[in-house]
Length: 261
Image 1: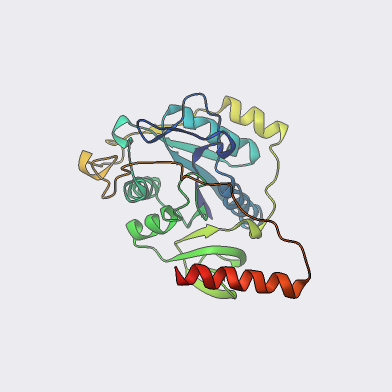
Image 2: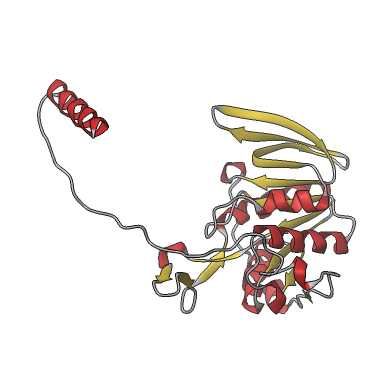
């Protein structure tokens, strides 16, 4: 069983700042971390590898410093890692990112399952996993809260939806996106840290993947981020105390008054 886990290096959301003039995120001096949702995908992959045998490969697309999250994943138990890095990849939206990651999966060959976290905490689009599936023309199961069974030929998983869950069975190969309900990620081990420190991580660029400039990065992206801004908020309100019935009437009057404006 060969499982690929697509991960992402993201800015720590507690430290995010915005350049008001350029309308972009300020990444300089902001600590970067492994996307927390990807840890659950990685743990799920390693659990099934431990049960069925095989290997887990982590892959990310990003600048050279994104290698840090790959080493973190290896320290947690991944078998090997791959970095997709090229100046041509800069500015990629989820479409171009998914296409690039999918091409890497094709180049690896003999991949049974691709796993990702449900979304990245910087973009929150939840589009990259499904995008990989679309580019590969593979079936997909999104928002997986539990993998019931994984064999050499099929997967049965619980897909959590509003109001309940769907039990879906699919043939392999398949792409799944994993929720935090699925497991509790393990901590890095000393042996894993030593392996991660010594590991030579291969780097593939645009030409290694057989891609052209109009398929990657900003040129290969059908969407553009025009501006990022912090919405204005106002701290105002009123505090009322009294009996529940009186307070309910106040709220009703307020809502009816607003509705009529």
